[in-house]
Length: 239
Image (cartoon, rainbow, N blue to C red; front, side, top):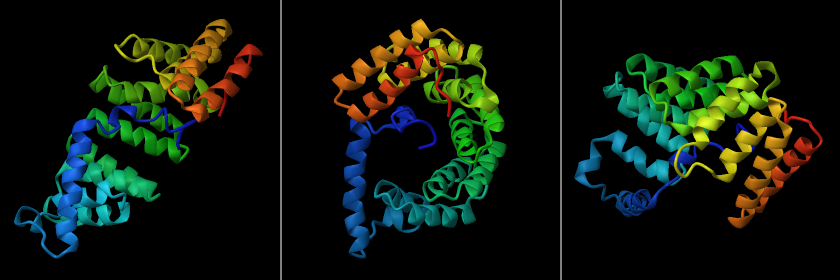
């Protein structure tokens, strides 16, 4: 994972019940494809076919489908975004950055800026990632994923520390309904600790551990617990 754990990243994109239903439908269609009976509605649309590969975790196959679709729709920003995500999944992050920048040149969106920030972090280009996350937030102030990721790196990445901005971002995020999750509280605690507010960091991290434990997520609870020990010793967490 780019950050301390995948529990932090992109929770907004976890499959909901409707998406799970769509996945079942796609898998049913995949069986027709394997049997050589691809439905007419999909036969001539490589972009649609890529949905099969996406859900089955076949990122390389999905990327190839998106490339084929782009041969006909080169100026489609959504296709370029989807290709970029598959390239990231296969470790082709530099190419993903190129596709994300192309997508943004065609149509700037909060989602594309957010994923560009994630890609840049994985390449060690932290300062550029900050700009991408900030751009996503400007376009959609209620989008919690880039706010969370930005608050985390501003709290923990030595080369770009900005504790004041991190506390601002994390506090605003937690003000939203249903936002007090273990991952979000972990970010808030890291921001408090980075700002030297260790009492608040301890209380927040303790709440995060309780929530993670209650959810049965012992690995997450253990990770946060290790950071909690730092805060109790008046030390911030650094990556």
